[in-house]
Length: 531
Image (tube, rainbow, N blue to C red; front, side, top):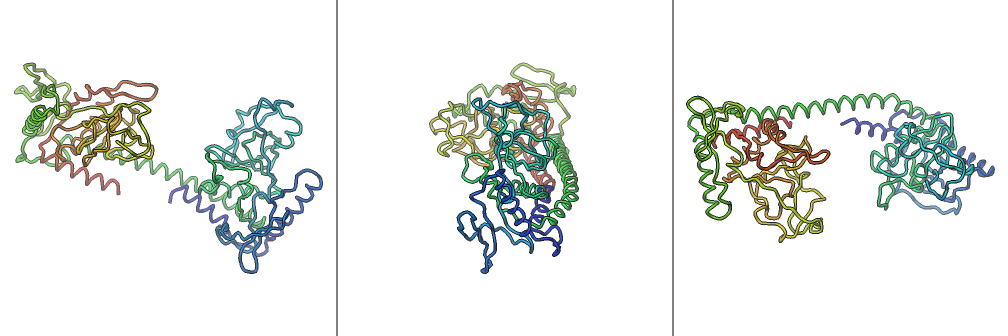
C-alpha cells in the first residue's frame, strides 16, 4: 500500500467512525444538529441569512430505512440508495448545506466595477490546507458585495472548478478577505466542525466522488457541494478524529516520502542494471563465445545477398548495394573499405570485439525511413483505416495503442511504410530523455504505420533473432549516447535525429547463434529485475 492509499484508508476509517473508539458519554450529533437549526432560525429572524427552501432532516424510520424530509414542503423520500455505509450510534447523516451557510464570491466583470478596491482571492490562492497570498489581486466591491462575498476567520473555503476543484482550506487569519466567484464559502453555524468536514471533502476528491455529475468540465457546483451527504459525528468525536489525524497524517507523509524515494531508487537501480546488462551484452560479456558458431562475417555476406535479391525484385533501390566492409588489418588497426577507398577508423571503434564478431554500419544491414506525412484534415480518430503510431505509442521495448491515435484512409498510406514483422521503431523527433526509445514489431501489421516523426528501422534480412538483437543493441547506452551526439535541436524542447547520421552508427555484430543466446539471456535477466 502506497502513501496515498494509506492516507485515504485512514480518512475512510475516520468518516466511518472506525479510527477512534466511540464514547457513549458524547453528546449525540442529533443534539448538535438541533443546536444548528436553532442558530439558523436566529440568523433568519435577524435578517442575516435567508431560509433555505431545500433544508432537510435525515432520519431512520421504524423499518430501518433512511428517509429525508424537506422541511419547507414536508415531502419525505427514502434515501437508502444514497447511504454508503453504517455509522456508529450517536452519529447522524446530514447534508453539508444543513450545517454550513453557503456563499460564493464576486464574478470578475468590467460591468460590475463600482465600489472600493479590495483584495480578493481566487482558486489560484487556495490549496489543500493552506493559502498562497503573495499574488492577491484587487477588484472593486460594493459594501453589499463585501458582506456577501467575503470570508472571515473560521470559514471553510472550497475551489469550485478547474483541475483543483474541491481544494479546501480554513481561513485562519484575523482579517476578512473578499472572494472571487469560483470560490465557495462555507460558514459553519456552530464552531468546531470545519476541520472534520475539510478531511471529508479531501477524501471525496481523492476517491473521485466529488465532482458534479453531468457537466462537461470537472467541477463542484454550489448545489453539489451543499447536497453532499455527510456522516456527522458528535462534536467531541469530531475533535478526537481531527486530533488523531493530526498525529497520523504527518507520519503517513513521512512514510510516503520514504516510499517515493525508495521507488525512485528502485527505478534508477533497475534502469542502471538494464543499461549495464545491455552494455555487457553488446560487448560479448553476457554469454560465452562458442568457436563453433558460424562467424558474423557469414551473416553479413548473407545480408548482402538478400539486398541484391531485394533490388532485383524492385523492393529496394540499387544505391543500397553501396556498402562498406569493416575489418582488422595485420597492423591491428580497423579499416573501412568502401569500393576502392580504404580508411583507418581505429579511433571511432569504441571497443575490441570478440572473435567471430564483426563491425558494420546500421545502414548496411537495415533500411531507415520515416512514416506517413499527411494533411490534418485527412486524419480522424474514428478507428477506420490505417492507425498511425506516434512517439507516445513507443515505450522502451513495447508498443501501445492510445485512445487519441489517428487514422488515415488506406489510399493515403503507401504499402512500404505499413509495419512488418521485425521492424524497429523509434522517435525521430523527441525530447532529450526519450532519444533511443526503441520497440519492435513481432508480427506484420497491415493496418498500422507510424507518423512522419518516427523512424522505421527495417532489417534487410528479416529474422527474429537479428531483429531482437538489434533492438537490444540500439537500446544500449553506447548507441543512445551516439544518437544524442547526432541530434539537432528542433524548437524549445525537441531534438531531431538525422537519418543519414543514424545510418552511420557502428554496430558490433555477433554470430547469429550467439545473438540468440544474448537475446535469451537479456530477456531472462530483465524478467528477474521486474520481480
